Image 1: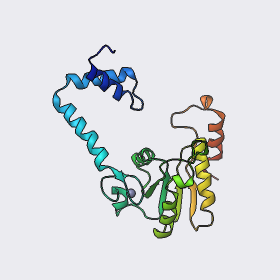
Image 2: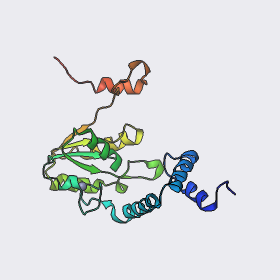
Image 3: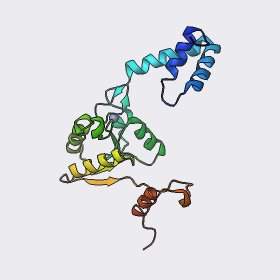
Length: 201
Ligand SMILES: [Zn+2]
């Protein structure tokens, strides 16, 4: 038995199942919904159902979309020939928000993880190969995360693509903006030195 009425307890329980939301945050959100006007709850409920019913994966890049292909794939102003390969839609969004990359994306929907039973056939790798053939791709940027699995996936893809006439690049890793070398771990520093760029020769 909780301290709140059963429906409120249930809402708190459901909210606390969301990533990054603990019991306290869930309670705060639930109480906020409860004291707000009915429109908030109505719109929230409708939005939740709408994303589940209408959002699907882009048939080309596997990003989220509510159409057959996403806005980036449909955008004629994006540079063709450059494909940025990311783990998930969240990574794609982060790169897109940086505003630097103007090419196309390919979302793998995961990384290789033998311990969790995730192999190449579980990722959108076959579709990536088809795109290389069909879209005249000249550069593949491997932008998986600098984790063990992300690195293994990038390494697997680069080996798989060696016989294709395509340039394969890996995003650089190293010291973050505003970072302090004194507090960096040695792995990060090693990567930063390996990924150093030429300023003057
Ligand atoms: Zn797309």
